[in-house]
Every structure is written in C-alpha cells, then in structure tokens.
Length: 322
Length: 89
Image 1 (tube, each protein chain N blue to C red):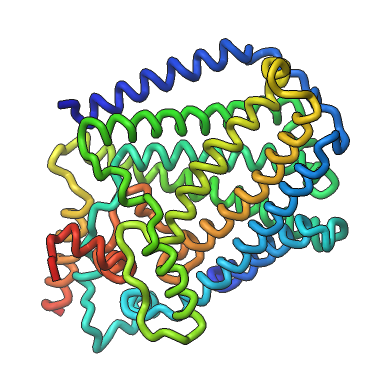
Image 2: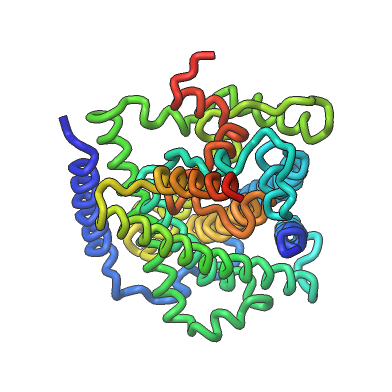
C-alpha cells in the first residue's frame, strides 16, 4: 500500500517528466509573437458562439456575486458574533471566545501547495494576459513590462498552471487507487448542490427562513473548483499550448481554426477573471473573513464557522449520526 | 469601512466586464477605470497570496521544529489561556 508521501513524490516526478517533454516538443526558445493573423477568419459562427457563452457566463457571475453578498449580509450566528467581537460588544451570547478559538482541519498540505502554485500562476497570467485583450485601456501594463518579457512571463506562468494541473490529476488518480476511494466524492457536484443553490436564492429572497446545510464544499466552492479545473486547467492550458506553438498542430488543425482558438483563449480568460473576482469577494470582503481568510494557507478553519457553513461535514468528521 | 467599499468595487469591475463582453459599452473612461480596478484587485490578491504563503511557511517551520506542533492545539491552548485570564479579571 502506497503512502501519501510516496504518491506525492511519484506525482511530482511524473509531472516534471511530462513538462520537460512538452518543453522539448514545443522548443521553449522559439516563440515568435503574433504568429496568428488578426481578423475573424472563416469560423465566424464559432467566434460568435464563444462570445455569447462568455457574455452569459459574465452576467451569471455578476448575478451570483449579488446573491452571495445578500446571503452573507443576512447571515447570523457565528458571523454576527465575530462582528460583535470586533466591535467589542460580545455579550449575552451562547458562543464563547473559547468556541471561536477552536479550529478544525480542512485542507491537506498538498492542497495548500497546489492552491498556492495555481493562484500565483493564474494571477500572473491575468496581469500579463488581460492587457493584451484590452490594449487601449490596459496597454500601460504591457508598456511597463515590455511585450517580449510580458509573453515570457505569461508562458512561464502558463507552464506553472499546466504543471500543477498535471500533478494534481496524477496525485488524485493515485490517491483514489491506492489510499482512499472516496477522495474525490467531496468535490463531485451532486443534485444536492443544485438544491443548495436554489435554497440559497430562496433564503436571499426571503422565501425561506432556514439555510441549506452543506457538506465539506458548498455549491459555490464546487463551481470555483471546477471552473479552475475545466476552464483554466483544461481549456486555457490546451488552447494556450496551441497558440504558443501553432506550427506543431498545423497538420491536424486548419489555420482558420487558430483564430477561433485565440478568441476562445481570450474569452475564457475574461470569464476566469470574473470567477476569481467573485472568489476575491468571498475570501476577502465578507464581513467575518475581512481582510482575508487564512484557512487555505494554515489548513484549518474555526470550528464555529465550519458548524455554521458546513454543518453536515462537521457532523461527518465528529461522527455525529444525528 | 474598507470591506463595505470593497463590495461595490468588485461589483463595478464585474459590471465593466458585463458591459464590454455584451458590447453595450466598449470604450470610454468608465470602461478604462473598471478594467484598471479589476487589475488592481488581481494585484491585491497577489499581495494577499504572498502574505498567506508566508503564514504557511511559519506553520511549516513550527512543525519542522516541533513534530507535535498543531495549529489546532495552539489555538485551543491560546483560547483556554484567554478564558482563564478573563476569569481572573
């Protein structure tokens, strides 16, 4: 039986091997800029579909942010107590200071490292990539960094994201096979998450008095995880590799498709950024977490917060069958 | 105060992307401000990430120094101490 440390080492070794092979395949040094021609190309209808999908996605994320904001401002219990604690009026309440001080393990060291590398890669990709989409508004960033250096940083960050995606994929597969089969069940979306989203919406609209009880990850966190895995890890990395070295794919991808892939890369980058802005709101600006939530860095979360937000998970961890 | 201003800032930057991506408004000072605010929020996140990573390294260092170290236990001891001090007062 393999241990977690051995799985981590094997995953790391395989990731380095795969990334090294990709670099050899692409030839890291030969990366001429603007190799994909401008224009709409022959696949205008595909470009239009991508633009519509991105527009709908951005509007949805905007509306979700409003719903989440309303939800957090309606929260009571732990969140209210923490606010009162900060304001110096923690009195006549069932929750004591000791309760607030208790912590519960939520993230493993591997998850902490994967989150840190993913975050630094994605944020670097935004700073170096988004200005290329809106040169008249954000061109000053490219001017400061200089285009060639900007593209080098962008590709380096892209490799970081690709590495971490490959690493976590291998790690998860080995973990499921050799350690714990239910490793992935916590993040798989279920019908319960749809009920959770509807329930939260009804709670925000005042149609429902009680909130939905979540397991380890709620519906919004699952959207976060899957948007990063699917959009950033899969779509952005694969389209980014094609844009980086289009000559390598010319035998099976017609040149007219490259413009659409470019549109896809840019469009989903905007969608991804909007998702991260929502994430920024949740982890930095909700009242009980301001100025920032350290749980993904320390691996722990206050017990009271967990009981409030993930009651079913706390019951599972504590073995409470009620 | 900042957290109350922060929410509208996030909403404004998201609204900018809604306007741009739906082609309702693609040029002008409002769009420039919105997009720059979005990039500013990304930079703030980078700084927060660096702060968080340093916190992770502190926990890692304490674990290396003392294998029995646990942030959960430390928080428990700290809260108990606070409680005892409150009782004394």
